[in-house]
Length: 186
Image 1 (cartoon, helix red, strand yellow):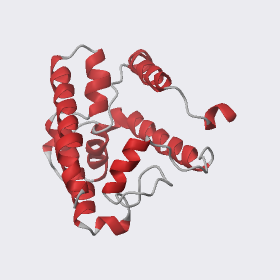
Image 2 (cartoon, rainbow, N blue to C red):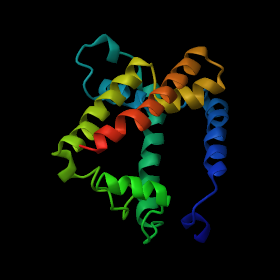
Image 3 (tube, rainbow, N blue to C red):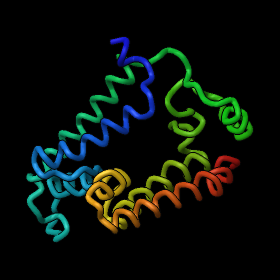
Image 4 (cartoon, one colour):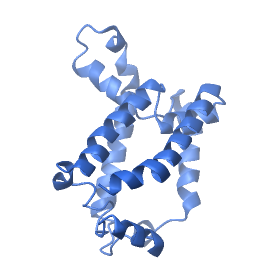
């Protein structure tokens, strides 16, 4: 139990994620990616005679179990394996965030950014609602999410996934360095 509750080296997650791709391919010719689950859920719950949702979603039911495992793992990690200590961040980052009024590091994300109270502020609305819509639209427009393209698509040597991953990275750098500081200053 001690091994699970301690921080792991950065390469351990990469190794586990990297081995997921061949495991999925060997065990059933399955492709890794999470954003398609919304489509599968809509097709299962309310197809509404829309052609986009009329397919055999039951072939992809394994993906619901995969997401369920992620959720269960997150609950176990945040309750059973949670550290009582605040999240440790670099002193330079703490000083920069303090300039934006962000000082709470008691959880995985600062409550000044992600909470019900912050949702009703301009900064929180932009980050949570507008950001969520942009991520959802972007993953649909790109034909998949970052995990599907960057992990599965690149390992399959797909050129569209290389282009999408490069665009995800450029967009992330622009957002983190040029746009986000202005949003945090609100």
